[in-house]
Image 1 (cartoon, rainbow, N blue to C red):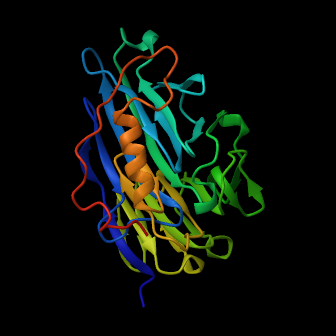
Image 2 (image 1 turned 120 degrees about the vertical axis):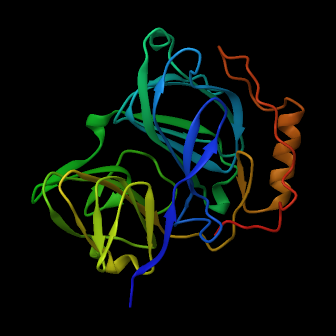
Length: 300
């Protein structure tokens, strides 16, 4: 019996002046563990006039994780943080009851064409922490646990696995791990995984259960404990997942919550300009019309 529950193909999505590949949520699989949203950004060449300029916008009920392979993004938020995100660093912002942030091409790169490539991820918060105070942590690449086994390099971006723990302050049991194979290799991680598990292929080729899979695909396992696959030389993958929540999750625009009323209140607050402002960035993204299916579709 196959252990692959579903294969998710990357779908194009426009986030304003910038195309991304959307991976989660997917109509047949809304979440993998606490991971509720994953966008693959680029690779795209950034040059005038097409910069990344995502004006201040709000979040509630989640933590955002930005991880770049190439390029740079200037992050500013309503907590007063202004940090340039560079490749290999982890930008982790927990929205809780409400935070506002912007993401833009840094000024020093606006005169230089460059490539931008990375992942933007949302991790839902446990129900009891959905309205916690917002906070922000930036972890540089050297601070992340990394190790090599049999010609395969591993980097733990967030969470805990194989007695390694990332300094990213997660709020539920989860893992996000980067695996790069310099030579053909067989990966057996099932004994160290838990909850629900997904495998995202960034580069190269993965063989599993007699099938070949390539870039821009997520393989979701039926049983994380049976996770075993082969990587061809030059392949890079990301394994993510963790313990699922007992309650369903809803999404409305940039808001995540376990109940509809919280989403409605957040929408009204943004429309009334009641969210905190971002120092040094007075832009504003109007909220899109309410989703007519809101309250009917759940994320779990």
